[in-house]
Length: 149
Length: 389
Image: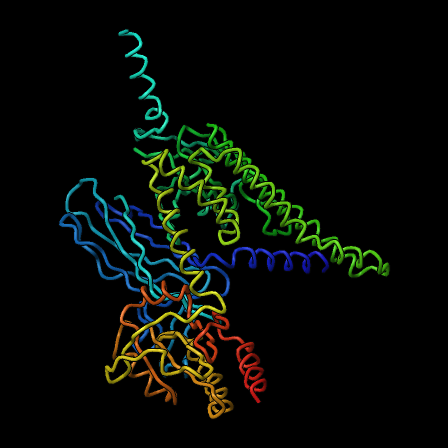
């Protein structure tokens, strides 16, 4: 018990130490070949404790939904839209009068793309997202990635 | 005579050679070995990422899976010397300077039964600049280890029946002593490496506000000496902006002049609030915590509104219609303005999160600012109103 108490105390200290740096979401972008000329693009958001980012399907009137946009590349065809793999937390928020759809901890945005010819190319993608914890929100910002295929 | 002229020419070129105005881009190979790989079901984390911080932005450069024997290798293609961060298995996070091929051996997975956030020290081999980062990181590492030890001691002292132990620790104030120790060590290291570009790594470890006199001359010298190192220039610009802005927003300074439109488009400013205590609430329609704070501000407004207390809300919404919709929902009985450019407003008032609230005195001078609603605001306002009878 003492050990557990002590480790939670340590975590607290760490949080205080890093509180000044406001970058609660760590993004990584990777690609994975799933079939001939077909790739999955994974945009993974690792979210710090207590913070949330919002689903692409968050209805208007609440938090601004995460928005993923791909730069047009004539060699590539997008297959559908980006799926969200993660634990969706959904609750009606009387403050906004709409359902809030959010992710904590981690979410993986997965987009399937087809390459028209067998060539090496890359996909440029930008993610606009906002984050909140229970005290504050950071306004929407955009991160850009380039993923090799 | 010719010889002398040649010598003179040579001497006159020396400073330029010293200034290293030309540095060639090159490929840097970083390889390493981890002691422990993540077991199932975390094997998907057995990767190494390299990224770069640019301000608050973290840019992913490359990644590679770790081989079953723990070895990995990454290549930075065509890069100038600069600071990068290598993330190994999400357990080790190591800063490097990309001026030579490097070797990073690290622990990897924490095999302890109870895992606490205590990353081990990692020594990067490859160049003098990386040795500097090794030293700076070591000071940081020792500081953290000592903090854990001191925390433990204070915990047991608090539980002990021997009260003189706890009293001694209270007097000693271990955390402050540690902080002084850290700053002193880092500052000596900075002095020793003040002419090297990698020193900016350590400049970021000390409080910029308290150490402006140390930091600024070093940055000025570095920009002259290493014109290719754009991050030094960026650091200098950020410092200059922060210094000017922080001076302007200290308690006691006049609140910056703004002119923002209200719902009808009429341009408004803070002048009209002279003689009143003013709470400026930066918010947005999409911000839950901001809207949770509204009833608390309404409560203060109903208590002190007729006693010389005023509120103005400034929204940083990009969408005018979302803002107007939120206004009809919230029905705040005070003025509502809309910032035409959220980034400008955030820079001007030095905040990154909302709600941010500025409390301003009767003479238009800043009393304090808060990010996240604070019960302190009501206490301060109530105190000021009582003082005034």
